[in-house]
Length: 507
Ligand code: IMP
Ligand code: MG
Image (cartoon, rainbow, N blue to C red; front, side):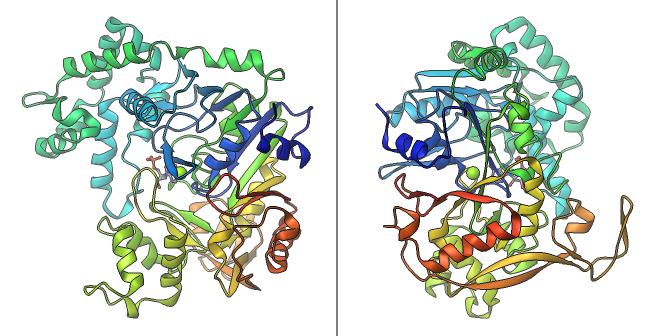
């Protein structure tokens, strides 16, 4: 029997019988609500497969009134085959905990697969991540602290371990000891008590891996990792081969993680994550070539957010907002007090209006990290960034969280950048102060000095949560969608008007 979403999908013409492989990727800096779209597509798909990143990601899906966040397991229908692909980095503790948490929520994954050749995150990697962020001072990236970059780095520098090592204790022990040898001097350069404090966290088994004399208790790590391997062994298999055998026959949904702006290869480097989380990379990460994707869906929000540091031309409140959101003492509860005018310690009325408006949208959109709880920086929709994304063979868009803008008097859109930096050679192009760019130049030296050129459209000022089809939508919202389409050449095929499953409209 076809489910409702399945019927809608087919009737909308978005999916037809010719389409077997669909990719869903965020075209901004992550957190665009891919989870809900993947969840929807997973009713159609036989297989949902993810190919990049690790437990730095957080996908939120609502089942009725229950919020469920997945970090590693694809957020699709648990009755389908869910694959964690070879391009991912896996922290076995996080995966084990996530499976247990899912069970507690009565979500039992019937057919979960874990790539035997996905890179393994070791306790060293989490410690390295935290130490390097501490010592980076002002240059820090604002990582999720999950050791992602360091696990990928080991894979690239040929000292890494893979999931399959969990199944072979002797190999695990030898590889892990060898890996540690490459890092000993790095760790020795830090205060041991700092390392101890990091190792004390529950994420690192509450001090189990600490050793007074040698810093790390390698035997304890080997023992624990082997135990995780025993817990996970039924999932571990050659997923690349499985996907290659099924592509073109079974219906596959590729779950992107993070977003194009965070891609190590195509994003705002060095303020990126460490995988290629572009549409290309997400296909490669499950063992496919992007040309094997029949339908590539790009997901954008009606505005933009970014977590951690890095250039963000349309940020409301600019540098002040960046610093604010990266201040660890700021959280949702605190911002709630400020917005209500109840925070005695804050001179909230002296805040810049733009910044306050961003904070308001952050609250309405619940823009607090699913993984770290950090406030996400908020900005207006960025069309130069979207035009850049269109180069990745994505024509069809899903626009989410339109409801967050319901109360806005006007909808601001960045339609170009004004370059305010010094003379700069970008290949054979000479850039200079005052240049106008219609498309993002994805180079940190340039983008950090790009200022948005905005246009304002009238807001719709209507609650859209009860709208079920395009013709129910307010004209000003349709005008906004039309503007984005005309300016970028993208087709907006699906819009999301609320967090619930039914808040989806096929355009
Ligand atoms: P890492 O992936 O933990 O190394 O962090 C690198 C950068 O990517 C930081 O700015 C993070 O905030 C960002 N990042 C990583 N994963 C996500 C995600 O799932 N959503 C949004 N930002 C992310
Ligand atoms: Mg997320």
